Length: 493
Image (cartoon, rainbow, N blue to C red):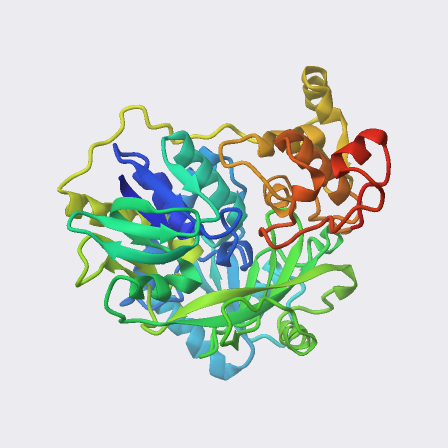
């Protein structure tokens, strides 16, 4: 029996696992997918919000304010990209100027540092490409950008290295309360645990209702985005927001930590929790709205569009608390924006809830908060590259030309404790397929390297989920592996 089982390996669940791994606890982290960060965490705006937006009286506001300054340390410890770019909220008419003042006052009440209301000319000194008609802006110097799935993967790797167990492809089908603890029924087998933490994202209400009294609902809301090539880099220097409305924070234009530009999202209520299609009419809406903020956005540099689904809670606020009627069952639910920004503080609060329930926690004297840094070949100097290639010639073999990713990097991310098992898993860890060709050239080589390193047949490699097959069948006799050995064309893509 585990001491703690966390259901959901998104950013909240992964952060909680890592923070609980500091203590003498047996921990299981479950997820229904093939990889961590495979839900909301892989499809969002990748923003670390300064914390002025969510109201001072909400849990969202308090946790965002606490969480924001915690990112510098964790990203340094875990070798995760983070940039403190600052952000701007633009006012487009005189009626919106009081909204900037309200946000400023709310942020001041939450002790958010570095807030300043700027004139149009001051705004344009920071962002020359904002539209000329703006009336002013709110500047927040502590806002930033991050790699959200990279953080979730790094947190999980660090948790595993400190003793936690990761169980993927473990979709929860039922939860039974025992006299002492729980039995969690999953498609991958039963898991027994003294305490359960529900961090199941879009399905947090479903998980809660398996064992506790229903008291909230999760309502899916889809947002669609454009991602522009690095040639569009420099379009904006900060995260550029629009004045918020009842529909949300509006369409943003932002740099990414890897030098691209992201534009979006819209906000569309859905019934389905799985529908991540992009649609022409909503993407056109994103373009129309973004044009209100930034002039001449170069959509001819667009390399992909994508959609993510937010878990909107019926409570209108985060839920981070032990169930009122089921002792030992903790809900971490409704973690929508600013959930990523709040995740360090959410994990901190969950540790305190567990501490109180368990009657205390004992720290591990050998807990290691650091993970082994990644070898990012494209960031090295010529002399460093030459030395790395001398040590391991596989770093001299470029697999992804768009992002200059080497075979050595791919082998590294496959064999880590939270290693890649799919094409998209490699993509999230080492970035092959994220450039302008979107994997058109490197994907076959990634498939071959995955199969070789994992010791499986090429046909066993999937794009992402277990259902996302890539190789559909043989074109000649013999197994795929036999054909590969003979150097024959072995499958149809």
